[in-house]
Image (cartoon, rainbow, N blue to C red; front, side):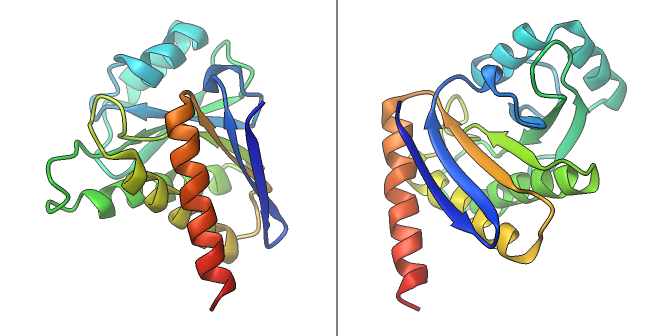
Length: 185
C-alpha cells in the first residue's frame, strides 16, 4: 500500500491511497458543493456509503459558503462524523481560489477540534470536477494542515486519502517540498 507519514508536534500527518468511505477516523471530510446537495465523485460516494441520514442533516443545515465547512453525523459510515467542506471552482487562480481552498481545510480542522475529534481524513478537495490543479491544491492543503497542527494540539491524526496514484504522487511530492523547506529554515 502507498503510504507516507510524518510527525508534527505530537500529531501524525499521513498520505495514503484508498477510498475515503472506508476510513474509521473520527471524521471524514466530504468535498461538498455549497448547496450540500450531494453530487458526483467523493461527495456522491460518501452519501451512497453513509446512507440517507447524512443528506437529511445536510438539508436541515441548508447550505455552506465556499471556503467553509459544516459537520453532520457519519450515518452508516465507520467514521462518526462527516465534515462537508466546500472548496472553490478553479477558474485561473486569480479569483481568491487559494484562500478559499485553504479556508475549507482550516474550517474543517476547526470543526474537528470544536467537536473534540482526534482524527480526520481528507480527500483532495476541489481537484476533481472543480478543476483545481492537484499540484497547487496539494501544497495549499498540506501547508494549511501543517500550520494548523503546529498551533493546535487536539487533533492527533490527519490522513489524506487519495484515490488515484496521480493524486497520491502529487501530494507526496508537495509534502517532500514542504518538509525540506521547513527543515532548511
